[in-house]
Length: 350
Image 1: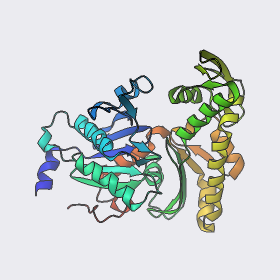
Image 2: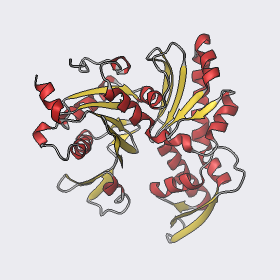
Image 3: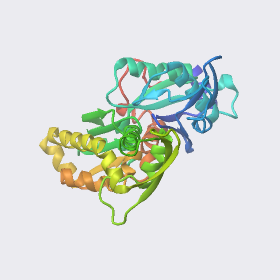
């Protein structure tokens, strides 16, 4: 009875709780929030100063007692209280025109496929404590496949590669379930770290994570480009301690990213080797679908195609696939309840 009362005033939401960005889908409205998963905390008072875009602008620019941090590492919660505060901020933002005591939405949250039961429980508890009436979990590759408009409930096989900020999810899906999956702790953040290391080792240049990400977006590639691309890297010279600027080419960028890209491609091949023959024939016909921000790396689809001899397709708007998949489930929880992660807490109320 009370659930029905609160649902009149609450908006059910789907959340792609990513390491780099959090996207929020509101039932009947679509994606309404896309902000960095960053929280600024005053270490002296333990007060949260900013969340999302405002906190991201503080990264690397704060005094020692203010820390701009990501409460999720490799797709899982590393700081429970800060994650809870961030979720509450997003839930309140969606319900800004609703009285606080009436904000009790049902929430569907995407999680990596390789998380433990303890990590699942942490996500659910954080959502409930942040104001959700019910919290449901969906594995990110399943959500990405739904968001990419794959027919996950059909008997035919589909393969999805979701390269996010903290994790790369590789999965084969059939009949509404994941047949084979791998979750790698190598994705966009690791690529940024590769560029930081490359700058240090080859140019004696110390750059920050944000600079590395900007360089990756500007000239990062996985395959030789028809025209050379260059980017400026600015940081501190490790020899003199003075400011320094260097120009890096896409060829050097590929050299920096090679280690991470090799691991991702080798794991895609390893998953393909495990696929049952009947499903692999479906995937050969339909191709591998790539989602997540990492799939936008120039030439990555060609690199995977050369390694697997499979057709490769990049999903439409790959950055929002998981959020859109969570949204599709939110729109009709009863019909799509079978794609949710089974937990004793996630029973669909009638």
